[in-house]
Length: 347
Ligand code: SAM
Ligand code: SF4
Image (cartoon, rainbow, N blue to C red; front, side, top):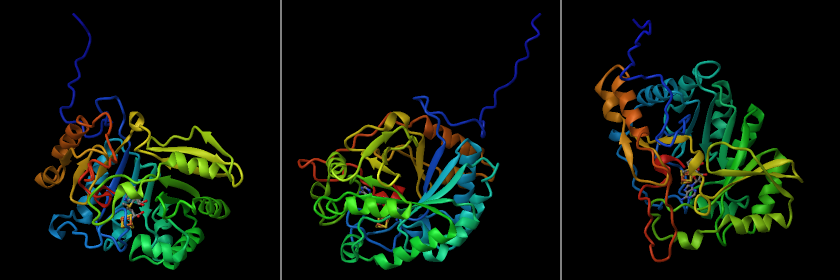
């Protein structure tokens, strides 16, 4: 007789790690808490953008429950984004709730990507809730250009936000989208400015997401290989093996001792190490930034007070995570290959 004991496997483990079909462990969730924004950046939205009906948007309590379920299943990093996350009413409630999972509660990091317009108001509260780093998107340091790119934004307001972030003790990384003929002549000065202020900087290639009205992405597209050559005329850039599981590759800027990241989804494939999924404010989970396949988590969330149907739906979704994306910017295919806007999944 064997003394081996058969232990029944739980049919719906809500706490086992999330592993996709390509053996990638999903440990990073990006959550777009709203698709609304107080800016209208030319590469992101049309000026007369139509937003999701408010009735479809999850409550903050529902978003907290969803995020907590992911943390229970092994997600260790949460990034709130949007639209502009800090324009959602009562957003600090959600951030404080999620902050409770830091320091031994399963979460290693809670962070935000923001346009900075509301940072002056929120920087201290963010720090108090456990946020230690924020990504702030600024594509230019020229106030007139800033207005032209964001349509509705004021650089001065964002600068006050950055000062508040510095005072509060938040580390800042600047995200800049490289735009042909718009800010390409300024990226070296911005890199120096970031170095002077102790900020890392990430340059992002324009991604073909969503209809942006009259603007044409082929005209906006600037390959980062060109940006790198230009920056290398002024700075010594040394590749470093700093990996986040995301689409950025990093360099050390020897002159400033800062870090420079390049996000190049169009010219380089970063998918094999992808550890992330993206949740929209309506509870739709996108397993890949560059694909339209998605899973509805709102129905299972609302179907039960326990998280079991939700956990099953999350696992089923992760089992469909594709190997990679196929973004393309092509003059012969002027329509955006991914129909949704970046503000839906938050980049
Ligand atoms: N509103 C916040 C902000 O601007 O940081 C968070 C959301 S925004 C969609 C996140 C990032 O995506 C920003 O750095 C923005 O510049 C970038 N972004 C938006 N649309 C993009 C596009 N089509 N291609 C590349 N980056 C884009
Ligand atoms: Fe708003 Fe960010 Fe999109 Fe600009 S990039 S319109 S700030 S969501």
